[in-house]
Image (cartoon, rainbow, N blue to C red):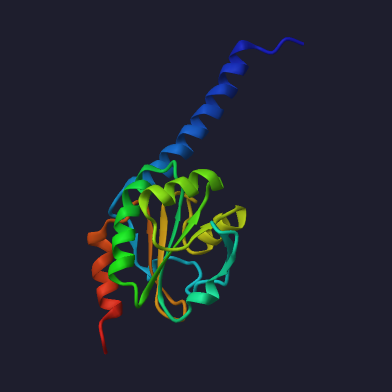
Length: 184
């Protein structure tokens, strides 16, 4: 039985159209700088779930290590342009807020490029190697398109105060960190 060229063309159009639509939504969602979402409008977990992943030194690191700090949890990859752009700002903010704030990067990537990236950018906070469970964690935290980068900020104890899809500028994050670290 010979399959019609029109049938093949229609199937190809559906596949390409569907894939390009998904890619457009993911790109559009991850690239817009104005999509910082207040916690109240997202129907996801409100407290950072426990997690543990291996760092670049091969040690198992747990979220329980950081429960007494403000946590900036960033899901990222070396091949992601907005991730590359925000990393130097995160390094500077980690240095500025070292006593009260802990940045944590969860890399959705291969270890060798992540190690090279961390060395070349002078990353001064833990980089953990994510896997499929890390993608699931980001989704539970509000990353409904599973795009990168995705950042969550929590108060001590783990209450989520910010979810942000796409690149995060220092000018967007620093005022929140100042407010959270202010006495009283």
